[in-house]
Structures are given as structure tokens and as C-alpha cells.
Image (cartoon, rainbow over all chains, first blue to last red; front, side, top):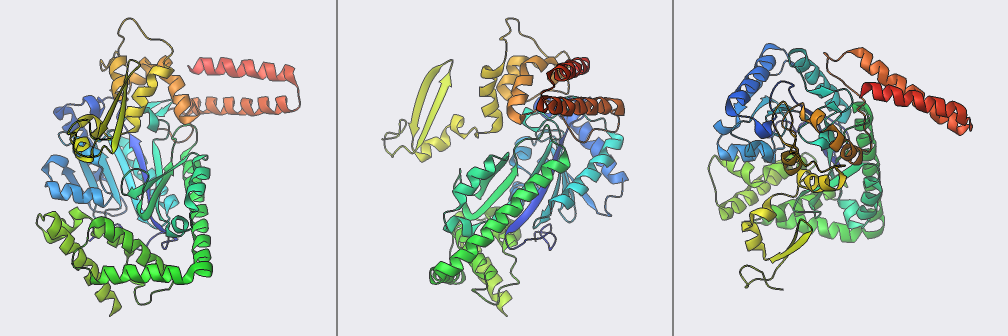
Length: 344
Length: 162
């Protein structure tokens, strides 16, 4: 089960999730790019001890060295957006600490010594910021952070200097994509220092109409200003998406219904289905449910389902390694089961 | 166009490499591209950055100079796009300041600072901010004499901070 994706946050029809990430480094240690195993262990121990000694939202925390985790599990955690591919690349020296509800995690010796992350479902950036800030202050009591009075928190890469903050939201935008309005909107948004990328699929193409927006720069504005800007722009995108959906209902209802029901038909009857196809069709069925074109499925957490049908999560839940064909079969089963369970 | 490597499949990945101003083009099919380490080296901000350093560094040092704390050379930093320790940024300050301006549109951090960092420095920052606002106001009412004074004050404060 994907625990962090619960019922918190607003605008859950359109905003899938929110995330705040802080990049931090320790003054007296070499940065991960030239860090040796011994020193990395020391950093891991230091951070672990602080987390152990404090009560942080009464949450229980698990501590892991990346190299001790089975491969499948590592990749499953990437699909769940809890750890990053870069953490695995550094597995000789890296580790992470994760709360039992998966909402708070600290990657250790990824690109920076610390990457604090707070996740939430829906649009919930301000709450995530509050938690990340508190966690950061707790660590600051015991650690000596690398900081420069002009450049702010010193990060391994100059692109994260200053606040070291990245605020992002994942947004589902089928309406804007179908009405062809997305491109123009994205052009406008990029002028505000916000970057947008597709979540699934390669390059600028996005499968499942899922996009991630985040702040491009980290230095020169304070944390609150940055987060408010991302949230404000996310809200504007949400409103534009709502307008686009209304437009589709007013002008092309039959066509939309047709696409939604065809997708529904394939998803609930398929015996074997690839991730790409499933993500694409789920996006349309989710749209249909959000617009009340399909009834009885309001309880399905589509945002969760998008993750559950990813290859590693399927294998993790099955507790075994599966080849592509076996995964595609399992995926079709999971989808069918989810739909039949919720319609009862 | 056929793949440069296998000469069988259609080339769908087009890759251009520029080394010392010399352009090398590669056209590969999907499969061969997958096996090519250079293409697979993810297009990342860091790679992009290391390409940008050439353009923004003010001087190309003759002697290899390095961070006195961790020993990372400026050349290494340019290649990786990442600092080796918390003091590299001071060692390479002159070179990377224009780059930072270019990335962030700012040169000066605003926001949270660590507990151990003393408050007087942030007061100093606020002072500069206030002066800058006054400067802007002076320019708006075309009081250039006052503006010049303010500009000098800001300069000396910024210099003091280094």
C-alpha cells in the first residue's frame, strides 16, 4: 500500500500531490561527490541519532543504508516518489530515513548530505513547508550546516543555492491537453520562473496527462515567497483546467463520453496491459469520474492507482520478480480488481 | 537516415557533441542509443551547467587553482558542476558569481539561515535592502544627487560584506 497518499490536501480532483524538499549540507564534511565510505557512515550515524532522540510528530522512523535494500524495493520506492534514482547511484555511501507513514523522508548522501522531503496528497504545499521547516530546525540544533552569508545554504550544485528549497506539485490536466490549451499556458508559466515537466513518459511528452510544476530558482527569494508562488500558479492552472473541462462538457460532451467509456471498456476487460496504455486510459477514466460521467467509482483513489500499476510496485506487491509479460497480466488483474471492488 | 552504428535501423536519436569548438554529430537508432553511455548520461542541469561555465568564467587560470579545503580543482568543479565541500564556493567565488546571477537572477540569499549564524549579518542585509528601496524612490523623483549618495553607501556596505 502507498501510505503517504491519503486524504490530506485540497483540489484532489486535479492536484495529485505536493512536495517540499530542502537541500542541506554539513560544514565540516566533504560533499557526496568526493565522500568516502567511512565519512559517509559518520554522517549517516549523526543524522540517525538526532532523529532517534527527538519526537517528530510522534512518528516512527525507519533507517536504511541504500546498499542493504533489495533492488526491487529500491525501485519501488522511486516509483512511490520517496527516494530518487540519484540515491541509488550513490548506494555505496547513501542511506535514507523514512517515517512510517512515508510522508517525511531524509535522503542522506544523495547529491547533498541531506535532502529533507515532506510529501502530501492534493494541494498542500504550505503545510508541507511548515513540516519541512520544523524538521530542518530540529536538525539545525545539532548539526553545523554549510552556509554562506551571501549565497545562503551551500548545496553541491549551484542551482540549489540559497534556500535549497524545491516546491513541487503533480497535476492531472486532461482538459487542458485535450483542448490544446496547455502549450500556451506553459509558455506563460515559464516566464514566472516555474518549470513544468511530464511525470510519465520521456522528454516533454507526458503520458496520463500528469505534469509536475516546481520553482526553477532557489536564491534571492525567501522560502515562503517561493512556496506561495508555486501554490498560486498551481491554483491558476487548476482553474484553467476546470474551465477546459467545462468547455469540453459544453461543446464536446458526446466525444468526451465516448473516449471515457472506451477507456473504461478496455481497462475493465483487458487481460494484459502495458504501463503506458494503462496510465493513458486511467487518466481518461479518472476524468470521467471527476466529471460524473461515470458513476459508482468515486471511491477509487486514481492517484494511488497510477503508482500501484508501475512495474516495480506490481512486483513488490506480488513479492516476486516478474518478466514484462507477467507484469502486464498482473497489471490488468489489479485494475480489474480495483474497479470491481469499488462498484459493489 | 540509417543508424551510424548498426547501419540497419532508422536513426531516431540525434546527438551533437561540441568539444573545443569542434562539432561531432551522431545519428543512432533507439537500440544503439541505449547502449551509448554518452547519450545515456542523463541530460541534467549539471551537464548543462558544466557547459555553461566556459561562457561565464571571467578568466581561464593558467595555474590550476584548487579549493584549499578539499583539494577540488576549478577544472574538476567545471566538469562535475558540483562543489566538493562547503569552502569551494569561496575558493571559486569570482568565477561562479556571474554564473549564480545567471541561474537565479539574484546574487544574494534571502530567507532562512542556520541557528549558529548571527543576526547582525542579516540586519546588515536589511540595511542594504532599505537603502536600495530609498535609492529606487530617489530615482523615481529624479533626485539624482541623493541617488548617487545612496548608491555609494550600498556599494561600500556590499564591499564590506564581501
